[in-house]
Amino acid sequence: MWILIGSFLGLMLLGLPVAVAMAAASLVYILVSGSVPDLVLAQRMIAGAESFPLLAVPFFILAGNLMNIAGVTGRIYNFAIALVGWMRGGLGQVNIIGSVIFSGMSGTAIADAAGLGTIEIKAMKDHGYSTEFSVGVTAASATLGPIIPPSLPFVIYGMMANVSIGALFLAGVIPGVLMTVFMMATVAIHARRNNWGGDMAFDWHRLGAASVEILVVLCFPLSVWLMTLAGVSVNWSICIALAVLLAADWYFDFSAVMALMAPVILIGGMTLGWFTPTEAAVAAVLWSLFLGLVRYRSMTLRSLAKATLDTVETTASVLFIVTAASIFAWLLTASQAAQIMSDAILGFTDNKWVFLLLANLLILFVGCFIDTIAAITILVPILLPIVLKLGIDPLHFGLVMVLNLMIGLLHPPLGMVLFVLARVAKLSVERTTMAILPWLVPLFAALIAITYVPEITLWLPRAMGLGK
Image (tube, rainbow, N blue to C red; front, side, top):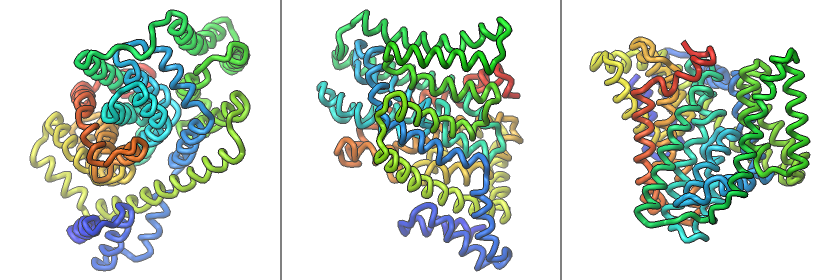
């Protein structure tokens, strides 16, 4: 056990990438211990990637890339301006609302930071906001990407913990709303302290147009429900409602109705059983292609090829991390390391609330040094047996784990959102880190609420019949 952990930590200290360190440490343990055949290394790594839920990884990444090149991000931003740009600290509020909408399509924090973040930071700086404030609010709002469904980390957690991915998606809705409220309150506090006004004049026409778009989206599931009450089959009801919606969008040229429909289609399709959460990723790609090639006609073959190549590159790195973490996690279990760690934690406390506090501290620490996907793959086999033994719902714990790791994305030395925004804003990593620090307050407030009030997470899945 100690050979495995010591090799991993030693290779990490030498500066090797996390995935390489895990794979090399696993090989060292196999060679030194002699207890496992060498062939197992390749077999377990391949087995780690042979998973149906993992098919969602490339498709969610591709959907985020396609949304960025299809011009959907600009439409989301303009819609958010119309909705909340008149508030105090207007573009800060726009930043958060834009991330809420985009998170319903991309499923990753990095896609949000790199896509909307580029537009948002430039606009905020042009309106006189400091670069530090612009970067801070963009970083904080990017963490909403994997909390509000769909979510790539939820796919990985669901696969590792044998938990319904659809239930995880639903479990993220109310926590995402709570985080949004906390962040918007933080912007309001900054605005009052600095005597900021709105960045757009209050305009009933602009606000009314944005509100109408929200009502149009809400009318879609309502009209489907009413048609089913009238005896029309669910499938025909959806086809009719979608045809009417597309015709209305073409005629009125709404700003963001089609973008707002993405989470409705994904969540609705999974609820009705039209597709699994994995297949929902394919639906997200098809919707993105429809918007870029047919509705907005903003996507070219060259930009489509670039998005595809970017997706291949990102997917390869994610899957290499998954395969390396798979053999590492398997050896942790086979060498009894996971059991020893579990017993040590249970020996310290058998109170689930104290355990959740310790788990938060551990995951926060790990999230600062290890990639999100690798951290989930390593920590789930260690912590899940304790979670089940203490009677904690694995759905609830999944939200706690993912939110902790999202906060880790904002920290050096491995915070990818931190590095993306440092590059976008042309700030040093040190200045970017200092800009993000005040925004940890609303994130930690949300984390504490989600950790110690499980109903925030569990109410919606239970209401939809997917929770215990």
